[in-house]
Length: 109
Length: 116
Image (cartoon, rainbow over all chains, first blue to last red; front, top):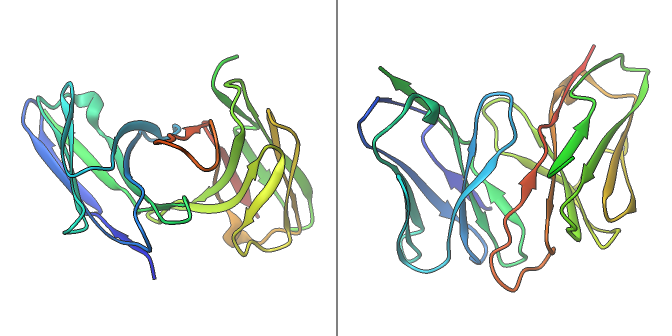
């Protein structure tokens, strides 16, 4: 079966750095997405990786290793507004998105 | 209106009721999706429409019935639901169903459904 694993919850301090990991086992791979979802709101797109390596976008970076079936989302200079759930999703060989259950990130002052 | 909108935002219904969820996208996209989101579970893809044709139906019970009258509108008709169907129902759209390159999905705010 297809599976996406990410931690259920993480806590970090304002101003610090946090890394949210995602491992996947899917039938085929056509890219990996990270979405952010604030409580009671719609998920919003953060990043897309299809090649190995690091993609940087402001305070957020996303890394992919296809051989290891592994990705992480790195958030720097954490702000209180970064408190949200972070969803990892993989596009499989049928171009269907397989979603993880999400990581709830709690930022403390 | 911009982006993806959904109505109603909240819905409480009894098991014998019939109701409909509405989704509208103002992005000129060709593909639309219904997802179910339950607490601490992955998003579950329910239905996919591409150019108004249903292309996927992921073993969803028949008490959920989708309708896509045009590429901008998507409905989810509900009847004789069960309490375990209580969840957040999200609509999303993307430029195309099968991308030539990455193809992010744009989500609506969701309908919080409670079945009594």
